[in-house]
Length: 329
Image: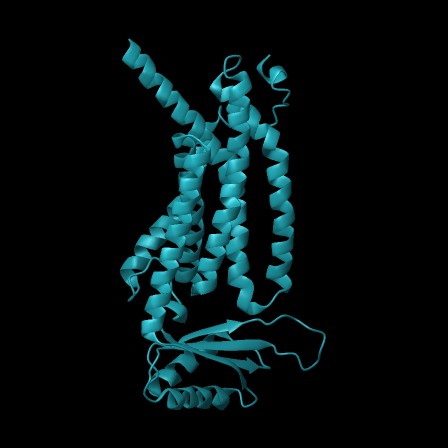
C-alpha cells in the first residue's frame, strides 16, 4: 500500500540493507585511510599523499624518447643522476597518445628533482647529459620549475579553497534543508573526498603518482557534482514527507524517494563517465590524473547519494524517534 500511495516501483530497498551499504563504505575507505596514515609517516613531507612540485617546489624535465625504457634502465638512470649530485630524483615513464605516424614518440621520460636557485641550469644540463648518454636522440619537450615558498603557498591556498567550498555547501544546505539533511550531506561529501584521497594515497605508494594543483581543481569539481546528486535525493525526500509523512513510515518514504531519483542519478553519472573514460584513454598524458579523480569522484558520489546518505538519513530518524520514545516513557 505504501508504494502504491507514492506511485513508485521499488527497484531497490536501500533502508532494509542499510548495514550492508554502510559496511561497504567502511571497506571502501579503510585501505585508503591506512595508506594515508602510512604515507604521513614514511614521506619526508609527512603528507597523506605524494605531493608534486606544485606544493613542494622542484623541477620537472620531460624527454621524448623513441625507444622502450625498461624498468632496469630506470634504476641505472637514477644511479647516474645521483652520481651527478642530483638529489632524490623521481623518474617516471609516461606513454603519450598513440598516433599513426612512424615518427611518433614512444615514451616520455619525466624526471623530477629538488628545486635549487643556484646552479639550476647546470642541474638540467647534468640530467640531459645522463639521458642522452643512454638515448642519444632524446629531446627535451617540457621543463617546469616551482620554488619551495610558492609551493607552500599554493598548498595553503588549496586547503583554504577546499575548506571554503565545504563551508559554503554546508551553509546552503542548512538554509535550504533541516539540520540533519545538511549534516548528512556533509558526511557524504567527506566520504567521497576521503575515498578519492585514499585511492591517490595508495597510487602514490604503489605507483609513485603525485598530486598537483589540478588534483585540487578536480576535488572541488567532485564536491559540486556529489552534493548536486545528494540534493536531488534529499529534495525528493522533503517533498514526499510533506504529503505522505502521516500515511507511510519514514523508511518507506526514503526508499521511495531514492527509487524515484535512481534512474536519473545513474543515467547522469553514466553518460558523464563515458565522456571521462574517452578523455582518460585518448586524452593527453598531463590530464590523466585529473580525469581519474573525476571518474573516481563521480562514481563514489553516485554511490554515496543513493546508498550512503539516504541510509544515514533513515538511521538518523530511527535514532531520533527512539530518543523521543525514551523521553516520553
